[in-house]
Image (cartoon, rainbow, N blue to C red; front, side):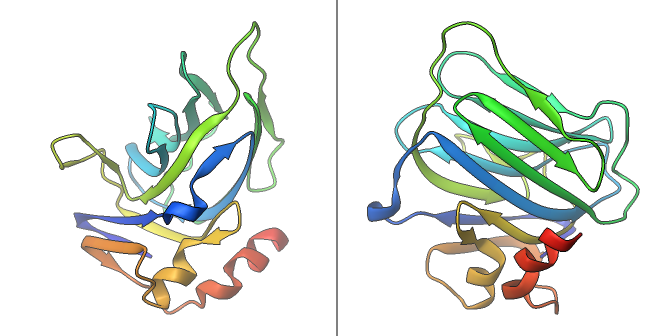
Amino acid sequence: MIFGAKGGLVTFNFHEGQIMDEKDDRMAFAFKTSQEDAVVVRISSSKSSDYFQVEIMDGKVLAVYNMGFVDHVVGDFSRKVNDNLYHVIKIYRSSLNVSMQIDDWSPVFKTPSGRQIGVFNQVSQIMIGGKRESKGQVNRGFVGGVRGLWYDGVNVGELMSRGDWRVKIEGDVTMTVRNEKNSQADLSKE
């Protein structure tokens, strides 16, 4: 998927039978950009303010997540990824504990202390290309490429290429020639 300068958003909505509470999540994708600040992927809840978001801030990639009370942040704050080259992101969440690996760099971890909720309530939507605000506008729009986005068994790029009814495409977004069906397998080798 290529997100152009005019801005765009790809939204995948889980159908009613797929919406559930999650204690563990896995996500993998590759992206490239030259932006300093953008939301690449946001996963949100239909029933609460729970979310998991991968973003670029000051040219560095980080994950921000909230399962009820507090925003938690994990990322590699020493290296920039806005060099317009593809970078592979792999994330695993178990309760509030998150590991994130960028390319072949050492993984970074977040293990919040104290008693907190670790369940992502009613996971219902994946947004690629920015964050939709309550008034409908897209905030912190992403410009660049995303390939092989896989979240807990859902390959959004593959579904988009097949014209799946659960995927909505808005704005300046084009599908790349690359076969999205094989992207997850490719990511595991990179």
